[in-house]
Each structure stands twice: as C-alpha cells, then as structure tokens.
Length: 400
Image (tube, rainbow, N blue to C red; front, side):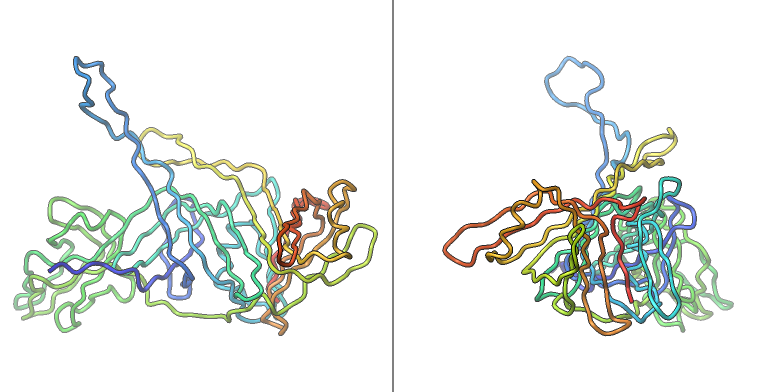
C-alpha cells in the first residue's frame, strides 16, 4: 500500500539574497509558519509544431523556457520587541524596500525611491515531506485583511526566477565504510528525479553510520543528477565498519525552525483618521483591506538559460478599504469622492509597547463609497487610493 504525502508541517524561510537571483540558504531564525496552505507554480514554456508536416496531428513540442514562477502564502505579522525586526520583516523589506531600525523603540518599513531596487529573496518552503527552494523572488503584492476577530496576517504574492526541490527517497546501492571509513560525494537513490540540482538533503541515519548525516546542520548540496546518481558537496563520511544500507531514507534538508514573536489581534487598537483641514477622530470599522501592489515583472534577456534573468517594476499601487456600519453621521462619507476630500489614516493593532503594529497613510483620496442595502444593518464600504504626500511615503508599516 502506498503512503500518500501530507501537507503538515508547513514552514517558510525567507532570506534576502546577497546577489539578486542567486539562491541563498536559510538559518533556523529565518523561519515563518504559514496560517494557510502555500501555493507554488512554475510551468515550462513549449513551442509546438514548428514545422508544417503533412498531418493534422500535433507531432512534437520543444521546451524553450520556463515561465516566471508564482507563489502565494499567508503568514502572521508577529512583533518581537520594541526596536527588534520581526521575522516577517524580510518580506516587508522586499515589499516596500526600506527597513529603518530605531534601537529599543521601533522598526519602520517604508517605500524606496526611484533610484533604488527592491531586494530579492530566496524562499524555502517545507510542505510535508517536500522542500522547495524559490530563487530570485520579488514580492509583487501583499494584502492585509482587517478583521476585528482575527490576528494580523498578510497574504504575500511573489514572482520568482527558478524553483528547485527535494522530496524524500531512499538509498538504492549500499555503501560500505570498509576498514578505514569512506568519504563519498555520490549516492545512488531509488527516485533520482525527486530532486533538482541546487536542493539540499540529509541522510536519516545515526551518526554511528554516517558521521555527518546532515553536514553539521547545513545539508548536502546536490550539484549533479545522472541516472540514479546524485552528486553532492561536501563529502559525507561513512564510518569504518559500517554500511549505509539499501533503503536508508534520504530526506530534504532545511534547518529545524525556531519561533519568535507574538500574535496580535486586530481588535486591539483604534483606527484614527484626520480629514484634510480637520481634526483627528477615532473611527469604528467592522472590516477592511490594505493592498500594496508593486506591479513587478520578470523578463528574459540572456539566451543560455531557461529562466528569466531581468526584472522591471511598475507604479506602486496602495489601496485601502474600510467597511463601517451606516449611521446618520456616517452618511457624509458618500460625498467624499465628489468633494475630493483627502484623509490621513492610522490603522493600529496591539496596545502594549513592543507589541504594536501600525499601518499609516499620510494622504488617502476617496475613490468611491459603496453602500449595501438589505433588511439587516446597513453598511458602507469606503475605498481609497493612497497618494504620496511628499515623495514615496504613501504607506508606512511600524512595529513599536
């Protein structure tokens, strides 16, 4: 009977790439735990039936490139302490561009200017018994749903250059340590296509058999796949008088994750808005959405690789929606877009210093106000476009 893979546990690791588009490997402190299932997709691009052959059938297709990959996942935004960057900070830095740490006080994430690039990420994802590594990730969009009865979470959508993976397999050909031990850089496995070059693995065996089964917590890097054989680096050491037996599990490697930070409910903290020329006032909402879109695109430039090697970005779009119960006093919002009345807005979560997340917008212009009719309580949804008040300052995310 076959054993079907399952989707638990799920762990995401995000690492800023030192060289954009070059895979970087994570540490335990890069771990994030998704609050929903992750989606990963990268499809090959084929050209079909180039030649006009004497048939109505499709006869051949040629692999010409790999389409830019897409991935999405939801993670909680968890403050650690005042002035300490949260684990999700790497994603926020890749979303907006700038991280500013004020020691002991706060960490701010703000948009970068036109003379800077967004950093790229390498993202590793353990999904059950498979580990994926996504190279050259750009955070294209993030959505933060304001739900009073939920914790603060963000859904991140990324585009990426290349995906590699390793799934569990087993040793096909036994390796003897002999009298003096054996140093090996190849291994025959039963499912060689369970991996791609660039993935990492470890031997699930006691250190009495392989003295460095996980390469001191780094895993072994696959550098080549041919037939049933994986070539890897650095060398693994089979102990003297021991045998790496047929059937020994060979598993994907990522560091054992650690956790840090606290879950923060949206309900803790009051929204505050200031109309242009007016005074600040707290506003109650029953829901809302904050959406940031970078409009990035990966492009093909070189001719010696299947994968995209260039990037371009469009205009950053920041949009905000606030859903409120409709009262006589709030009916005035229906005219905002016609009066072109601008607002500044602060959306906090949390009330204890060091455990506060705050979204702030210096200039929101109303786009529309939609009112929903029914036999139950009436609601109004106010939709805004965030504009820069000076330059590249239309949104700020603060942990304090």
